[in-house]
Image (cartoon, rainbow, N blue to C red; front, side):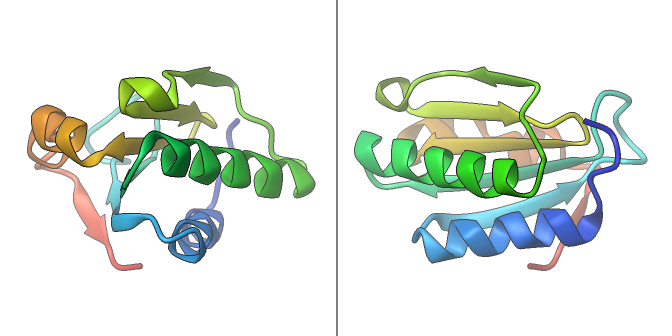
Length: 114
């Protein structure tokens, strides 16, 4: 979905904080990526926590009329991806986040304080 604003991204970060997601990071990819504007990355402590975080984000954004374009992964796999076009949310288990290290992979992106 085009039109995701920085305010919406920050609102989603607040939802993640509310759900006790860990190590929340927003990457502004507008100058380094053609397929999205922001990555929002966070970690969860268990598969139940990952699923709860993802479901809450989906519900809250749907209430605002923002529907995901695509969803990948399962809580049991340690990585859930929610694609909203200009915002892609990565919800990782701690081990999977260290392994994929998106922060390093997208090191040219600007970090947005949240």
